[in-house]
Image 1 (tube, rainbow, N blue to C red):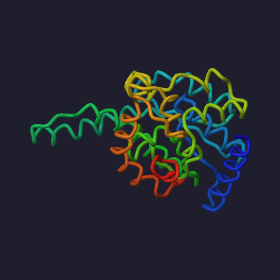
Image 2: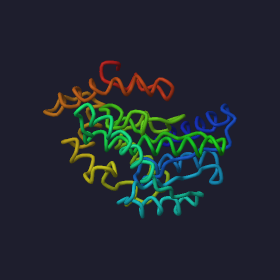
Image 3: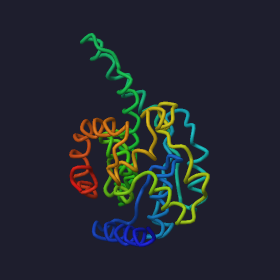
Length: 250
């Protein structure tokens, strides 16, 4: 894993240099993924070339953790509340939906916020000549636990080939605090942990990804993966290739 970390850091620098970018911008959620990606970018580029953005939608349950991670890493950061932009979009689409006897679905209200956040990140990145770092991991991508053109978008994806369990190990090897690296994963949108929403643990999913060992949950994993292919093929074609990591391609 230590060798993998060195490879990632070298690759990050190559990606940024090849794009003639001045640095990277990262959406800091307060979770382990953004923390680990930010640390990897710091090791590759230096603290002054990594800019964090905290983007609450009104209230943000993990805002204090997001602030703690930025302070811990000593990176410059800004807090931008997306509530007004989010509400404007939601209110604007209410009228055409009502004309067609439709209402807002729960999935729409959940997925709009990550897309507003990604728009915000690209607005900042474009103005600073920075690249947007994607913080998705292999476990989430495998089962489509992400928002298409939201949190699964970006210019490069440092942890895309690593499971949630492996991301934790990377974080600890990088010397990051255990209480942040090993905190319970949540999307910060639904008010539930990832595992509560998914109905299974990352530990079991990650074991299945790496070993293919059949369990009572295997069918759930494969069904979710099948329905996630449109996200994987639509977004990751210009990011790190994940093809060889999916079951059936080993």
